[in-house]
Amino acid sequence: MKKILLFMVVLFAVVSLSACGEEDYSDQTLVVYFVPSRPADEILEITEPLADLLLNELAELGFQFGGVEILVSSTYEAAGEALLAGTGDIAFLPGGTYVAYKDVADSPLEVMVAATRAGLSKDSANPADWNDGLATEGDPEYQVAYYKGLIIAGPSANGQALSAKVNAGEELVWDDVKDLNWCVRSATSSSGYIYPAIWLNEMFGKTFDEVEGTVTATGGYGDSASSLAAGTCDVATFYADARRDYADEWTTDYGRTESIWAETNVVGVTANIMNDTITASSVNLSQAAIDAIAQAFINIAQTEAGLAVMAVYSHQGYVLVDDSDYDGARAASALAN
Image 1: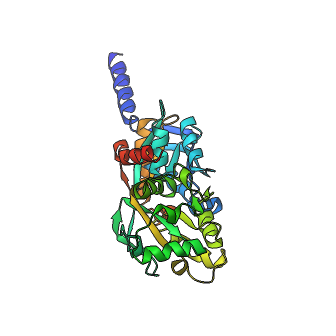
Image 2 (image 1 turned 60 degrees about the vertical axis):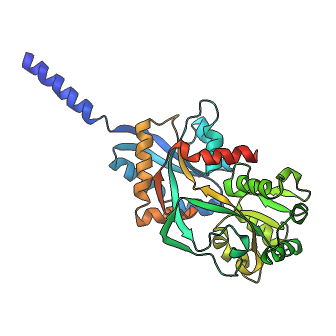
């Protein structure tokens, strides 16, 4: 009898130890949010394969989930709120949005990985260097963990006047930009608002609140590009490779006859911005599960199918990061606000 009891104790210990690296989430759907940097229907179409990719990869790592639901938030802030509330488990968040919701009291947010992308053929701090009429190209062999924000002038009369001054090498003054109609993104968007606000402060000692023209927060970068093409906005804020993403729409959907490279000009370049995060909420997930999800995304991005999904944001890989890596984004947010 003693031998049987000893055997049962040892068997229980072995089973317990073997299960330490596995967790059963089979009754839970993992909710993944993408933010609306492009039309929601496009995002959902491109990312549809992610559900199976993520389920399979997590199963390989010992974590069984009942399913994966892919959603697109209405705004960047809505994705952050979903993580705070636990109605979302994972979200693709820009650095500015991440720190805004990480730094609230008792926040459950935890940054997992940062995206890497191909560096661009143009990376100058001088805006005129971007205005040679040629497309900006990427180099997949040159991976970087940052990007720049651009202030781009469109084909309106005011936009063209501003472009002419920049391309002539003349220094801009506040009177050149204060009466323009601006298209910006939401207040926590790094390239769409925060870093352009820092650019305004560094260049002119001013804020968007002091602009005497209009400052319109658009529903997405596609809306900004469309408004720029229509002349509704004279200038708009973008991420550095945005013109590549909307080059086709510029002539097919937005009614222009010349290319986006011919009709737009960079008039301002922001400081480097840390790449987007994939952030988890610990409301419904253990630390072990969060670590596994981080590894799953790294593994998925190393496959052809995974890269096709991550192309939705031009991501080409992921690296582990810490909260402290986004202290620069905190400083930027504090200065902008």
